Image (cartoon, helix red, strand yellow):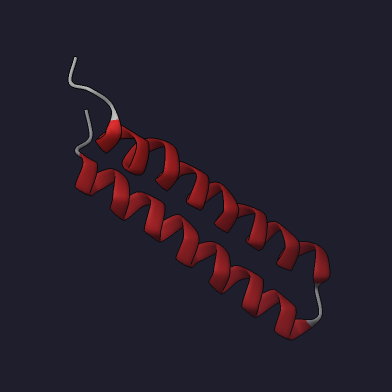
Length: 61
């Protein structure tokens, strides 16, 4: 089982990778790939929210 710190690192990496992809494809004019990069970043934010933020708020099992 991955620790909270590892999950946070994965989520942050997803967000950063998606933003870099969106920026680089936007600079070349490829709108579809830029939108997919933003979608990947949004999935990373969702991952952070569900696996890190709400995990800290759950009672211990």
